[in-house]
Image 1 (cartoon, rainbow, N blue to C red):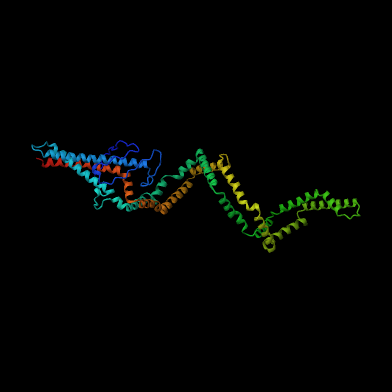
Image 2: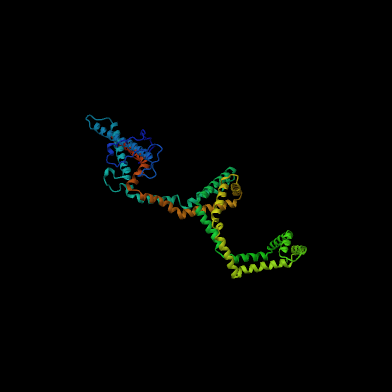
Length: 473
């Protein structure tokens, strides 16, 4: 029957913990939901039969549905009583007033309409009066098909790529994001939330796992290749680029400075190695002579870029570069040094040391609003916000990427999302699914019964009136 204006059919609210009101006699054959005790207020107890529904919410829904059923059924009973009274009155001798026929016709049609709609609504959830009439108890029998149909409907009409990309494009996400980021308080909020996320993520990491990653990705990777050949190639490249000259200058300068302060040491060494018969002044003269020659030599080396000593150092470096790359003995020697170094305690604990210092520094920087990290995030947010606002090409590019990502997700994963609907419905017990749906929409379906009674009565009254006008006596 067509819908008329909705009426407030709510009865007085039951107090929590009260027993449900018994069903009316005419409902004795229907399957009433099992009684459920209401949990105390604030207790979020989940009902096993209705996943995700608290006992308090379920009890309220049952009470509301029961009140609506009682009201509409009561209206049907009233129509039946009026019809029977009019029929009795019409059967009395001496005739009856004309209005009785109109009332009887309205009551009769209202009763028929109410019964028909009661049958239609009840047939959705169970067999009316327990009679297994074909095409009744539709939801319990067809729940899997209904779940699949609902899943398909949602996928086709809500999660299709064209609709999603259209909505995403109309939302002008890049423009709105740019406007939002350009506000200093929002940029600071991004920095604050990014800092919280970073600090929490780093703090949540297991130190043992982080150390294992550092050891595998850094320490062990450094130890895998031979060190000699790459070191030789690096040294050779430095020589070709002239980068070793500052090193040679530094060595020469260091040697000259050491020589300047070595006079006493030289005299002492000469004195220690002098013949026992040599007089002391001879030793002093020899020591001073050696010292002066050493100073003269180091001064010449420091002053002359082409000094033979410098050339000797250059040749030694060139030979070393070649030996590191080609000499098996030198390569093996370097590998031995590498093995000793990697086996040292400092290298073995390097992963733990690196993670401890790095994680502590990152967490501190992430939590400190004045840290360079947080300030850079704020500056970056402001910069990107202004750039997005000012650069039309960038906004178009971002919008294209966002809509493309939305289309990709819709095309590739909408089926997995909608499958949740069908799979969930399939897991429900047939009676459970019927009860769940009836509790959700049964209140509104009772308006169909109400409208069936009222519209039926109105239609019966109109038909009777027309027939009286045309054929009445």
